[in-house]
Amino acid sequence: MSIIRRILGETRAIGGNQWLTDQPTASTAGVQINSQTALSIGSYYSAVKLYADTVASLSWDTFIRIDGTRRPYRPSPSWTSMPQPSNPNFTAFDLKHRMVSSLLIFGNCFVLFIRGRNGDIVEMRVLDPQKVEIRMVEGSPIYTVTGDDNVGVELTSDAILHIPLFATGSALRAPSPVEQHQTTLGLAAATQLYSSRFYQQGASPSAVIKIPGELTQDQAESLRNSFSRRHEGIEKMHKIAVLTGGADFQQMSMKISDMQLVETMHWSVESIARLMGVPLQLLQYPEATSYASSEVLMQAWLRLGLGPLVTRLEAGLQRLVPGADQTFIKFNIDSLLRPTTIDRMTAYRVQLETGIRSLNEVRRLEDLADIAGGDEHWKPLNIGVVGQEPIK
Image (cartoon, rainbow, N blue to C red; front, top):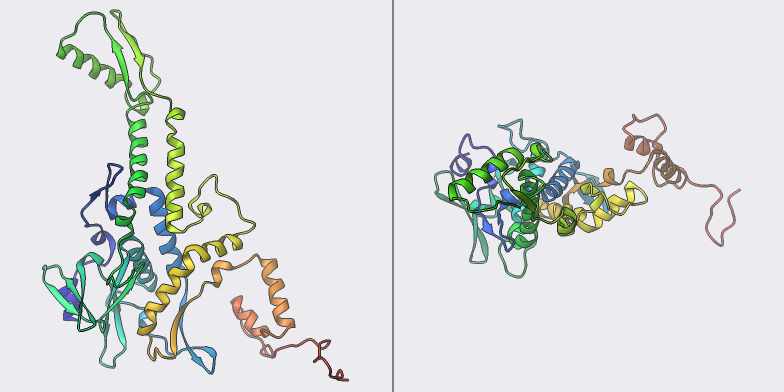
């Protein structure tokens, strides 16, 4: 356990704000973008949270393939249910959630795994991607993990699991999506900031008060401050202004419809949804195209974004399952495609009548107890082999 103490510290929290320490970089939209400012964008935060929550909610299990048949592998590795025995509050949900968040925010997921004396993995921890460096030594990757004391610890792939999101060529790590899409995220952040400033400073962001004659600088400042104090801000909008001494108020700003602020905000949501591979309907977009059913919607999302992400996680985690040549880990995505009750019952009836499933197998899918004689498989009696006489 000395490796964990050196890298993470005995009391250091895993995940959370430790990921949000990267230095902001100015985008072409004039807004500095890093992981923290990116997550302040509502649509980007919603997309990342949607992926992380969905994947973390999926059950997973280990299987072994024998003679082409997939069977549950038992006993399952302990880390699939208890990633950190020393911290019972850190569940498998947290492990999956932080792996996905790390991938989508930084483009890379690094997991430190510790093996016990018998060779089985007894602990899993998600590392801060910004504190992990990779280099190749004689064809093998070496990971330098910087700890709390700013001292690097060198580890090999025997202790580090690295899953990149979108690596290309001979690159050792994938680029950060936040850095790669600074323009798109910067424009969304700038639009969000502008709209908040628009309402913070009042419905009339700029205007001119014309005064006959000359004013000193102090008089002009006093007049401007007095007018702003009485009429600036959303709580003081539409208050009646009284001007004396021949003063004239002239509004200089455009209407909100002329500035197309709402359209720009909608465009930002659409751009981030396209970037993240999320259907607009899942981001609560008001003008999103409707689907025939929730099942069709989830199928579209599985094809566009969620399915490849889950497959990438499964491929990376496979080598951590004992006997990885024949064993593998699988996320259960069937729950996302769960149809309505009537459609589900119709599908069960077809499976029962054609012998695909037994009655007990169907009952298990509905979390019901087995019944006596329920393991038999049925077959239609009115179907036979072509060219053969029917059995009498």
